[in-house]
Length: 186
View 1 (tube, helix red, strand yellow):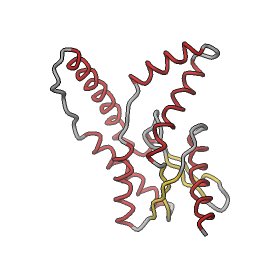
View 2: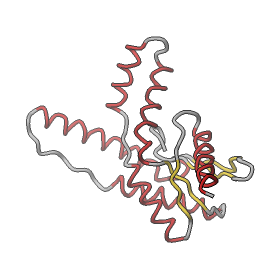
View 3: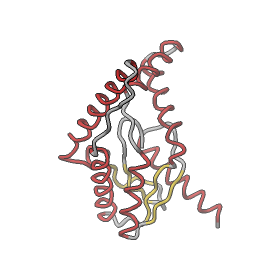
View 4: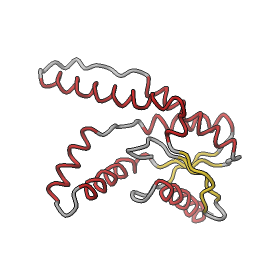
């Protein structure tokens, strides 16, 4: 889970630590991917309207639609489809407590790439990017994934996600982290 893609999945063979297949949000949602862009636009407009309302001391803020919840269900359903296709027994998800530091690390890395060797510029870029970046409800998404796992008997494990690396590397690290934790318990 991260900033650019709300969710990316990787099917990993635990014995060989090799990625069998990889799917990003666009591949998971397929034809419904346009809903994600619509949701992002909707969220930005709502945020801007609420900001203007606070400036006018009008504390009556606009509410959100249920589009985000619908997209979460679509993503969870797509994950289940892939999991059943590859006969997955366990789904690993990042711990929610780590998501803030993960997104902050992504923003910082993006700022360093965009403006190398200029700390003040990086700080300003990161600040501006935080304002425009889309925030996803990872808790709601994980809850939807838990529900589908319970229905079909797939085990759901929360583990520590790496802060840096490609999405595939992060997925491998997530699986390794969970396996190391399980080995220590035994």
